[in-house]
Length: 123
Image (tube, rainbow, N blue to C red):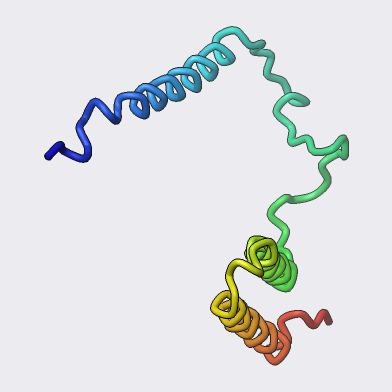
C-alpha cells in the first residue's frame, strides 16, 4: 500500500509559489529603485479620469447607493449560477429542475423582502 500524498508531490506547487513571490518582489523593488522620483504638488495630487479634484473626498454618500450596488452584485452573481444549470438542463433531469426551482424561489423570497423593506425605492 503506497502513501497517497508524499511531500515530493507538492514540490511543483511550492516552486510556483516561490517563483510568483519572487517575480512580484523583484518587480516591486525594480520599479521602486529604477523609477523616477520627482515628487511635487501636481504629482502628489489625486487624479482620476482627467477630471480635476474638487472638494473633499470624504463627503458622505447616501446609503441607498451602496445598498443598490450590493444588491445588484448579489443578484448578478446568483444569475451566473443559472448558466451551468441551463447548459446541463437535460443531463440534470428532474432532480436538477427541482433544485433550480428551490434556488429561484429563494431568490424570489429575497427580492420580495427587498421590495417590502423598500430597499430599491429612491426618494
